Amino acid sequence: MAHKVTLIPGDGIGPEVTAAAVRILEATGVKFEWESYAAGADAYEKYHEYIPKELTESVERTRVALKGPVTTPIGGGFSSINVQLRRQFELFCNFRPIRNLPGVATRYPGVDLIIIRENTEGLYSGIEHEVVPGVVESIKVITEKASTRISRWAFEYARKFGRKKVHAIHKANIMKLSDGLFIRCSRNMSKEYPEISYGEHIVDNTCMQLVTNPYQYDMLLLENLYGDIVSDLCAAFVGGLGLVPGANFGHECAIFEAVHGSAPDIAGRGIANPTAVTRSGILMLRHLGEQDAANRVKYAVHSVYREGKHITRDMGGEASTSEFADAVIEALQGEVWREQAERETNPV
Image (cartoon, rainbow, N blue to C red):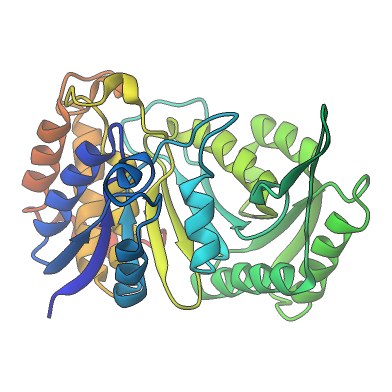
């Protein structure tokens, strides 16, 4: 039976990197029925909507989507498509695994972090209005419901996959009510999981601690804006946003996406790195129950990076987007992944 999946190619380099990822995923032998729809400015030109009704109906039907980057205008224009999709489908958990790829030299080898970010409220929601000319107010909303829900998700993941520590990250020394509520909910939830170590760190100190010694952390639990900032910071530990996958989970559906930008300056040149969206596809395969296929793609990507002959220019190579995909597909034919997968519990 084929998996029905909504495909949102995005814009800029989005269509190029998602096409490469789709080829890799299909090369596993898993059957897909892709329902492809535009979003953002491209969708508006065709449908006069930034998120077309047809896209919404597709996600409601398939309950899973693979998404490329969509440009968000800065300081004006339409609202973030990412934020709108997360609200629309109640995708309350943003999940970012941060782990080194073999062959990619970084200051911090062997990083293994899981970042769990509340996805539906807080300052990142963009609830703003102009009070009077020259005065703008942004509203930060934190609720017990959302804070408890994301805390439970984090601790459940830790228990299921053998993670040892969860740190709730906050600024409750200043925002005593909003961030205070967030950490109270996290603290209360931690009592239901006594086997998991629990700690609380202030967000600015966390950033310093991360760049000093990222190995002291296992899982980070954050509200929306802090999670956005800290997850990008942590991506630098393993080579940057072009390598890091992302997923957005709700009770009804999930959207898997590359977390980097749309890079319009290199769009259409065939040189963009499809690693992030491919690794997001690995998370999607796991979500769909296709564990063998997920492991095959994982270790095929690892093999290409370890060998270093077919990596893209941003990583110091000369391969095009399609040549990188070809190399991963060739590596999929091997069997090395089976032995490695038996010892592996990390998602990417």
